[in-house]
Image (cartoon, rainbow, N blue to C red; front, top):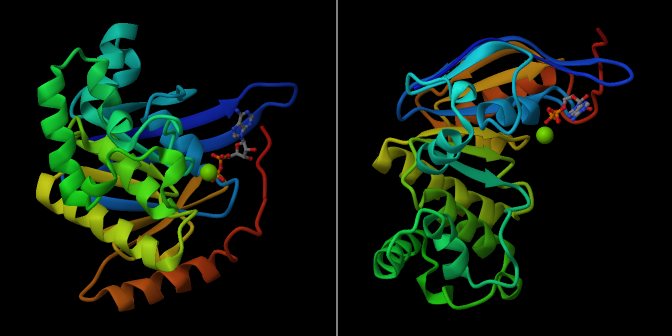
Length: 254
Ligand SMILES: Nc1ncnc2c1ncn2[C@@H]1O[C@H](COP(=O)(O)OP(=O)(O)O)[C@@H](O)[C@H]1O
Ligand SMILES: [Mg+2]
């Protein structure tokens, strides 16, 4: 489904900065992979390269057999809209619009019919338990509800690859658990692949596999086992082996 081959990223500037080095990573159809690593290790850079927000300096990205970085501008816009779903920590929702308006926004760009859009939006909202707040503005709903609205919008195109950057970052543990359960059920029901960056071991424990990155390089990976609690413990152990989370700003200069 997703194949990264020798992906490296150097940010040019007064001092060039090597953010990623030779990343090789494959995600299967329907697989749920989490990416963890200390702050500054290159997680967001990696997601930006996969989402085509940014280009790799060297190496290739393949999504369902296609290299999105090679597409022409309008082909790429369509590819992103139809094949990819994005869930970011700041949600990227428009606060003055209603939940429903936000959810159908990607479809309006495609010129879909209003009735069709509405039906689809309500079906997804129903699955996410937010159909009762469709007419509220984003500014009037809770963090957990906002996150569900963001997920609904990411799903409206039935993407084959969902990319999430810290989707539970702003949520309390109850809301975070709800969001994770929802992502897992979408992942299972739609057979969508899910790639999630998270610093939260609890959230990561819902995935099939956790890939650890450090200083822009793949460090290790672990697979889910028989139960989530044991996987959670394995994730915690790996994070402490890596030297803790969030307090490591080691940098690699080129
Ligand atoms: N646009 C940019 N220009 C220069 N350096 C950047 C840019 N974006 C990120 N970096 C640097 O690349 C490294 C990796 O950043 P990032 O991918 O955001 O890490 P993470 O998401 O793991 O915290 C950091 O040291 C960061 O300062
Ligand atoms: Mg980041």
